[in-house]
Length: 118
Image (cartoon, rainbow, N blue to C red; front, side):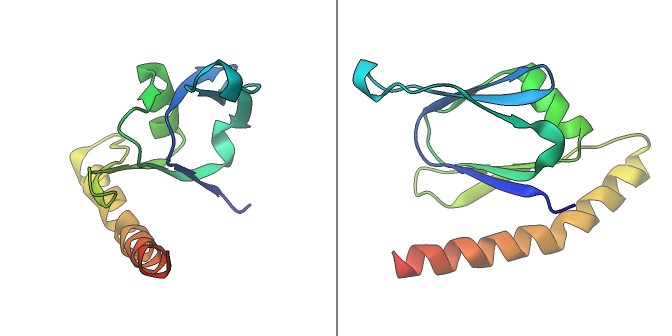
């Protein structure tokens, strides 16, 4: 099954409810819309670009248990860090990190192409 890539560039509140990612807008009253929910097991990786995004620790725990990579961007909107799950033994954690290296490089290439075109 193909996993989803989620990119958040506006202020949102991200939480967990019934093993689903709940996305709630953090705008003014007229910009509010219904909450959107996405099953956590369908997510491959998430990119958090906006500095006003809030999320719950329980959500991060669930994302890690489902092997979701979470990328955080800096004030220049470029990827600055990544949250990866480290299950089990430390050697397995290193193996997981090595497994995500192609994912990181592919994302950085996509982000660079997107920034250059827009």
